[in-house]
Length: 101
Image (cartoon, rainbow, N blue to C red; front, side, top):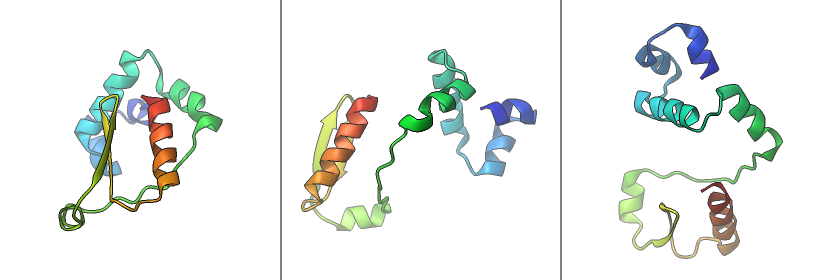
């Protein structure tokens, strides 16, 4: 957001140069403003507390052809995994997401 504010460009041009969807960018801009958090404060607050969990994203064709899925829903978030997915991985992913919702 700080880079956008300094760029003096339209949202569409700024996003196009960075291959960001304008709708997603606008939502995050609204979300940060609504929370009263400046972009720099949000990044600084995230700092050392950010923990990443590996996630594999598959295309729609792979999902359609894969068969059954297990769905875990909480706080308006749905996580879908294939049966047989490592339970520890799923538990870690769900715990991390729940702590953020």
